[in-house]
Image: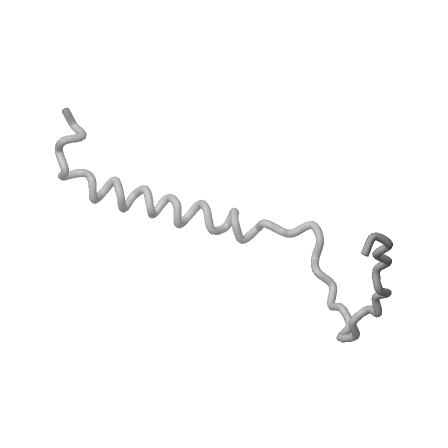
Length: 55
């Protein structure tokens, strides 16, 4: 059974991570968010108190 031979495991591990590190980062970094956040002012909006008729 070839899976019991531990000799190629390290090379398989290294090739797998090399492929992951060369293919995935450009795909992740190319992602753009559809809604860019816009800066808001430092003033907080004035809120009215809630009406609690049952209290």
